[in-house]
Length: 214
Image (cartoon, rainbow, N blue to C red; front, side):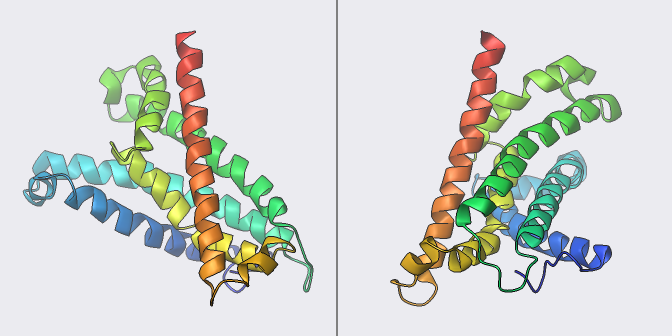
């Protein structure tokens, strides 16, 4: 990760690398979302409005969300590990990354839904409706019930290399990970962080739903 994301790297190269990681995380999850529901892939292959609306959703919502969250997260990682040979705690990465991914995921969806109501007439052209559906939509995304679930899991899948690197270089958990063969320990702990983030995002969205009904 340090090779691909460094604080002194040219901005365009940094952005390109963040985009590549974002696409590598997004495309497999997106393909699974298209293939798993019976008949959905066939519907999209037929072209026309269903395909154009689907692609517009991915380009105007999904990719910007995944890319922006990854860019900010990778920049924070590069800043934390900028000093050569510097040791750091895994908590430093988690505490920097967690607010970006949780608050950023919810906030960017709210912004994009709000703008979509104006630009594309989504949600009946109502900004208020667009904002009201954000939290319930994100709660369902945890179960992969809508396309926001693709963006949720793609955001975290593309960040797995960051978590693996953070685990391997942490003072405490890194030593524990070495008890497992190869890099399997680091990968395992990275997936634990992955699961924690998914739970945190879903809990935050559920809290917003409860707050909206209170």
